Image 1 (tube, rainbow, N blue to C red):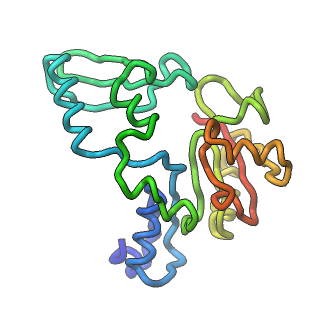
Image 2 (image 1 turned 180 degrees about the horizontal axis):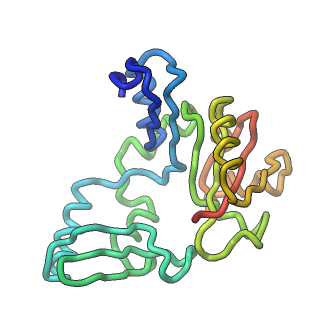
Length: 212
């Protein structure tokens, strides 16, 4: 990353909040040609548990697991599930039935550092993206069961980039007024987005757009 930045190439770096913060600390200076986008992160599960799960599923599928869709929307956005592609067949498992997804959503298998995440109170990204689970309360007409995304604009550079992208697309955008207590409660509720007050305290506000 730093090599490309020094060569004055435009770099888009995406990852979890802690990965963005780690990169910024490593670079030790700001670069105008660096764009950082993080996700609203539920946490990072144990890689050891994932390996065990893959072995378990390969046994059941009687073949090698080649790829996985963690947010398969074949049965709608709200009822997403795991879709696993093996060498001989595909398997869809609802989030309510898949053991790995159940442990992940219940916070039983996250890395120890995730339970005391420093990145939740110190965000260094330009933009934050994630699922907008509270969309039915604010704009139910935007919920087409295919998914609605939340974009939090955190910096002037992030706002400039977001506006440029929107001007070149036909995506419907709605600005969310976070000063409204009823709307703000969506962002602080663990049932909705699971983000804290610190995470959305940004001058430029928050926006939502439907996934394509």
